[in-house]
Length: 464
Image (cartoon, rainbow, N blue to C red):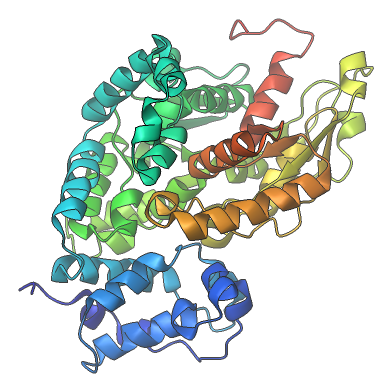
């Protein structure tokens, strides 16, 4: 047993007892929808947390298993009429599980030490692993191994994990993004760009697209080459102290008073990044700066709509439902042949972008501002795809059910381009579509906007 203070017992009790047990969250919870078991619902989980806070229940392995069966998708927070802060309860409950070590096992402890406590605590280590993986892929060793049949000798779970190994980008963010990118025209804002950790390895091209779009919209962009993880992986998996360490690193590297905004393009990271003040509430040195940080952190879609999106050339005739008051238009041009060909796009909402950050309309406004894009609504757009951080690795069966449901809805739209704004969702949908032979392009909305800027008739300042 841990000698430290209990996370759940130390919480403000008003947070623990706020749930009214009305059940309106039940239809929105993917795990309850699949099992119809009360313990797999937000209401059931909160009841367990409250029992521990009230000293009526010990922290057990069963409790730990339940907390990790939860996706943490936060759909219950959108549905809750009482405004229960399930995100805070959920993170403290998992921290309780880890400090009490009720799930401790040699294999689990080794994996957590390597991934959470060592690898993602240092960008240099993560990039070293990424470089090794990139070499393995570029030399054809991965393809050779897959064709050889050797993988069939491995246990099924290892074969499944190997099949979803992500492709590492040819270059990391620091190799393709300047430390300072000037605004293309008159500078209106000075912003910082967070390049992330896994995002840096797998989707550094999206980081580059984000910086280019910001520059096209009057922002000078500061992108330090050596950054740290935001800490969301750690906070969501019970490593509270490590999450605090990473928050302090980011506050030191990106003093919030120096920027008009601190930009993130990953839904899951952004949801965590906006709550550093709660994470550091007991830290006298960092708390005030953390409050300012929380106010300055902006999701890329949120920021662009706030400052006014510069609509790409030929966009006036395609803008349709975009609000004139929120979108900064340019002089109209005659539509080109390419602009007249509609690109049918559907949009999957990252759980932590929609439920965690309440950013729902802005990505759609961005997509509607792009010339030639026809946005088709996705049924159950805000239902989890099963990625949920590392949930697809730790709970593959439930994650697989959710992925199949999501891909079925995507197929029903007829769209061949799917936009989503979180690296985990992107990877989950890419792997799912590949496994099923679905010919889909899975893309971040900001990439579509960046491509529209590059296709403008005038000279391209970024050389693409």
